[in-house]
Length: 399
Image 1: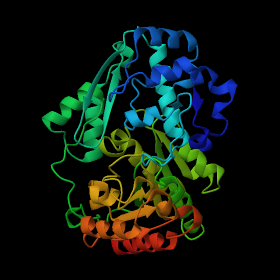
Image 2: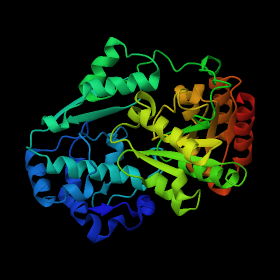
Image 3: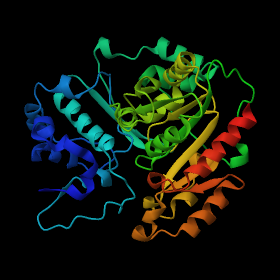
C-alpha cells in the first residue's frame, strides 16, 4: 500500500509516528476502505483487529460527544487514501475535493472512535436525505449519552424564535437535530431579507461564510480580518466538527487577537450547529459583541451545501471553488442561488482542471439572476477588495 503523499501536503506532522502511527497501519486503513456504500461498516474480523490496535487511545484522540457524523465521507473520498501496487495516483482535483487537515483528521477520529466502541453497545443506523449528503448516526445506548429531548427542543425554540413542528420535534428528540427538506433550491430574489435596524448593540452586523470543505472559507476569513481589523472592531467565530483547526489557523496567522476568536466544535454534521440549533453561535456572537464592543462579526460555518441562516447572519457569502469543475454553479443548491454573495474561488486552477470561467460566470448569472458573484484567488488577494465592497455596502444599507 502507498500513501497519496501529494494529496496530503497540508497535513503537517499528523503523519509523525508519535501521533497517528496506529491509525496509519494497513489494518486501520482497510477498515476505512472495506465498504463502498454510503455508510462505513467493517467486517467483524477487521474491526476486532482495529480495536485491539487502538486500545487505550480513545480519550486522547476522540473529543467528548455522544456520536460522530461525517457528512462528507463519500465512498470516492475514502478510496483516495490508498493505492494498490503499480497504481498511479490520480490528480488531487479529480473528484473536485481539496484535502485538508480537518477532513482527513475527522475520518481518522471517527475510525478510532468506532474501533474503540466495537461491541460496546453502540447502535448504528444510516439514512439518506435529499439535501445533499448521506451519513451514519451512532448513538450510545447508555443513559449518560442519551439525547436530552427537552433541552434540545428548548434550544431550538430559543434560537429560532418559534416552536418546532411535530416532525422537527421528533427528529430533535431522537438524535438532537433536524433535517431540512427542500422542494427546490430557491431563487435569489426569494431569499430572506436582512433585518435592517435590529439591535446591533446586542449582536454586531454578522457576516456568515459558508461553502463546501476546502473551498476557501477560512482563507476568506483571514483575508477579511487582515483587511478590516484596523478599521473596525472585529471578531470571528469558526465551526469545526471535531477540532478547533480553523480557529487555530486564524490565530497562528495573526488574523485577530486570540481572545477575539471563538472556535466551536459542533460534534456532528455542520448543519446541526450552524442551521438547526444556532444557539451556540448566537451566544458566541453576542458575547464577542459585548466583550469587545464589536462592530462586525465573521462566522465561518462547517463545510456543506447550506450556509448560515438569516437568524444568525445579516449578510451571507457562499464560497465554491474551480477545482470542482465548471458544472458547480449550474448544479445549484440554496447556497449558490440564495446567498447574498457567491464567491467562485481558486480561479488559477481553471486551466489545470479544464474549467471554463466564462461558463461558470454564465451559469452563475442563470442560477442567481441579479445576485452578485465575485471570481477570486483569495490566497493571492484577487477579488478580496470586491468582496469587502459588497460586505461594507450591505452593512451600510442595513444600518
